[in-house]
Length: 246
Length: 254
Image 1 (spheres, rainbow over the protein chains, first blue to last red):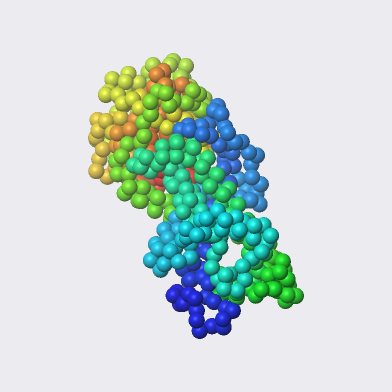
Image 2: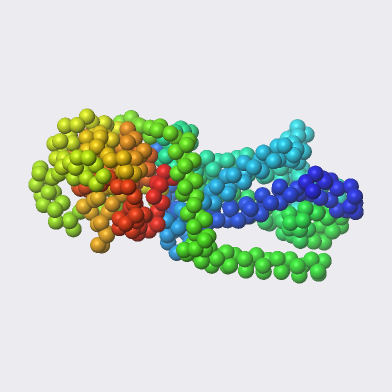
């Protein structure tokens, strides 16, 4: 089931786009990232100030101070630092182990090399610029070109896989006083309070990714996109179809 | 396209509905039950994996230049509700004594002078509150391990409990460590902070420093140290005031 990509036995306008490992990881992350973000906002509410450096508390200068996040954005919905930590620290295992297994699986099944590897041609400024213009005009690839990720898509996915998720996991670990004893994690990020700030910034990056991702799914045809992430089957958009859709 | 549009509406309606269910569901799942137990089991995973990774490694120590200019006092700022502590405080803890008892060979009563006469450890460490803030300060006092050694732990002892003079409402503050954290070289009974006698707001006459743990483990106003075989049967049974009152994890390493 995993290695039917692209499927040659199906009708030519359909193909198996997402492997089972990608689909499972995607939906696990829908839950894990949502729980992590919402419980994280509740933890932030316990001390809604961010600092830079090794220490930082109320008498010290905060580079960011926010009002508390409202209940509809947090887990739980009413103030409980203890329950938020219960959710956050349990789902942290799901997020971190999920990423680890997915990266290993994607390394060995060729997903990284085949689908996410950004080629030299794609790195060229003219190619990047063309892709940016296409996105700005909401001009999406059709036919066979739609089977592959475009370069902005690859950049976004690689940014999440190799930058934002590892950053949020390791800055999270850096805030643990026990782990800090064995591993120089906090100083790796410029101190524990810097790690806490970077943890928050990485969360903002992930939320931004999810929002853009959802907009792109809606623009590209939500039924086809969501179905492909459930069953794996993706219907290649025809020449005139995307225009009608948009 | 009409078909696709109505399906699109259905999808977005579903997403909004799912969002509402998610919020209500998460609150419901937080209540005692199998799911909460599953969430709570992560604490054991943290405890065992962190111990495996860090062994007996020391918490990071800092230089004087790294110290917080103003170390925030947190939790109870005095133990005025406790008559014994209040009278000791009025006499600058001159005849105050730390009781060491429970599962020990030789119960002890140690004066502040006796604690100061023991070999001392000084350390500049970072205090990490469960709320997220950190402050760096300098602490000095005898190692808890040395105090326990002079009392002589019985083989049945598994936990060291710190009984404090401060309380919230009618609930006295207390905390506990297992024997590994209790014997860690940086676990000290600090009577000095930033080069001066430990201030009242920070837990005079002594507070526990357990440098690989979050702030709520660092019991202030410690009056009595008790060696126990189990945490069951003591107050709420979870090994600490915040653990009983709010459900904070007993393993405060993350």
